[in-house]
Amino acid sequence: MASDKISTDKLPITIFGKAKLEDELKRMITIERPSVIKAIEEARSHGDISENAEYDAAKERQAMIEGRIAEIQGQLAGAEVVDPSQIKSEKIVFGASVVLLDLETDEEVSYQIVGIDEADVKQGKISILSPIARALIGKVKGDSVVVKSPKADKEYEVVNFEYK
Image 1 (cartoon, rainbow, N blue to C red):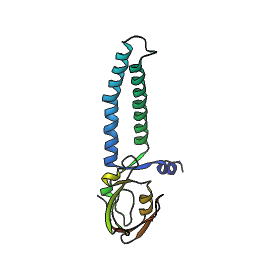
Image 2: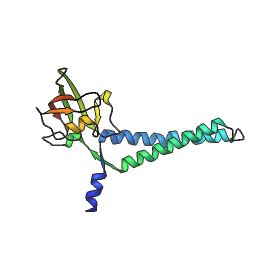
Image 3: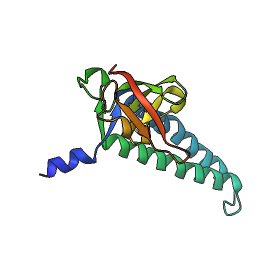
Image 4: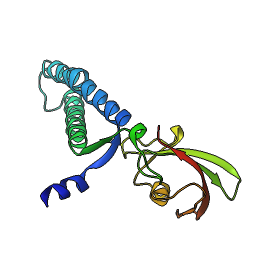
């Protein structure tokens, strides 16, 4: 029973998203952390740290870096890595690249459903937790979906989807 609980707590992430997080973590640990430590040492060398703005700024930056390192490590530990090219599903699930027809404007839009940290609407990547992704999960080609948003509801038709 306990193993079922663990798998439901894991958030999906694509292989690309995992690599991106790992690259950021490596940069934080090998470049950012040593850089801020050096800045703190330099600010300390200027004497009294009680009124030293450089020291305060460096300590604040250090806290931000350490927080981000911990955040990334937590995300990677709690991630379920998915290779979209290996998915064989007849329905839209995480990792799908979807082509939609906006029924109001008659324009096609394309999105890939990705992990929360990978989302970038400008690149056509939407979070699994976004309203549009939640509306698409389980749908098939030809289905209509209504996406509820604060501005207005939008209706789309699923033109096609694939896993790549």
